[in-house]
Length: 481
Image (cartoon, rainbow, N blue to C red; front, side):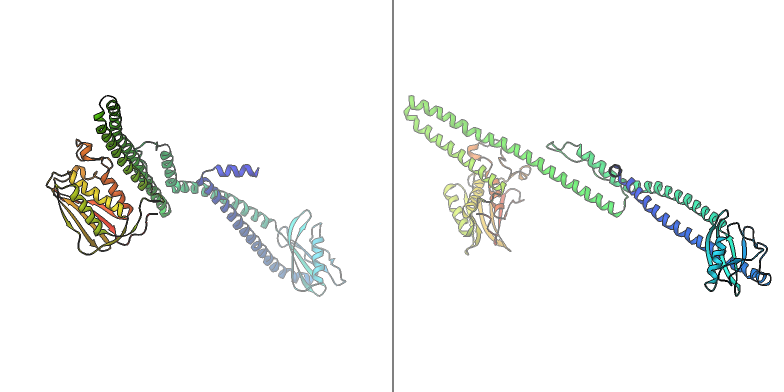
């Protein structure tokens, strides 16, 4: 039974449970207050009756002292008797106005004979009810006992209890009803948040562009509910942002897979075609065999470079424990000079201006990877500008950062393409041949490597020119194995 009640209580809504708990607490308070009030009223009425007995016996004492008896009742239902206690026992003097059952009066007279002062007692008289008795000494050996009925007191107490029960019951009912209404109103914001959560749970979050259109709105509820509502909406905003990041990552992954497949398909088809030509030349035109073999090797090398770049990007994205960096203290200006010499040798049609400074600049970095970044930026400047374009390379120090600027005075990058120049497989000129334009991984690889060093790479905002700025921390910690 108790288990069923507990189960039923747990199944109630929070507002109902709080209202019932408030009602139970109020019932305990009402019971304590009612008991205290009833007890106080009973004691007060008994004291009043005792004082009345005392006043009556003042008059009766004179009569008992003169006539040794009291012949008339002072009030209806009252009894008075005079007892002779000189012999050690209480003997009733006649005539006396006593009930048929006078044992209570006799016992009180005998008790008064053995004590001093006035003596009160409450006793039940058969056939009459409960009486309040008082005994006092009239003269030595003579005791006057008066008995007053307590029926009026009991009736008054019963009425008081009845009034209290009705009043407390109405108050308890009103408290539960109105308290439930107030609690329901106060808890309505929580119910709204619960409905919002159910709406979110029914929303399809598997879509790539899933968003959460619901929010917990509406005022009221107090500071605590307002704080909970703010935290709830902040959580939804965070979930929305996470979903947006997930959707963007999924789209980027799909685009990456599609672009990678497209980029790998061309060299694979070329390898297949050259392999067929090589097989034909080996059988029918031996003089063409070496040329087709060179082309096979070139396509395989190009595909190997593409796969190496993809693997490097994947390792950097995964933040592997064994990151592809081998950090050491190296002279950045020396790396810049080596990159400049390699550029002049490989691209004689472009003029390179170098400003590396005379002093060495020691930075903790991976020389091979930073050299790869510089070569990618310089090659990008040579490939995307016409012959004769001036290219600049500058090294500087600002606060605790080393900066390398690679710029050219070419036609620049259109404003519509600036936001995507670091996207993988993205080309500014969609019609450019892959032999000339590359695979679109040079800048993404450069950005990933610079970020792995704790630095940044950004594209300048100058119009009519292209400037890439690489910044590296001078006090970088080891980030590789």
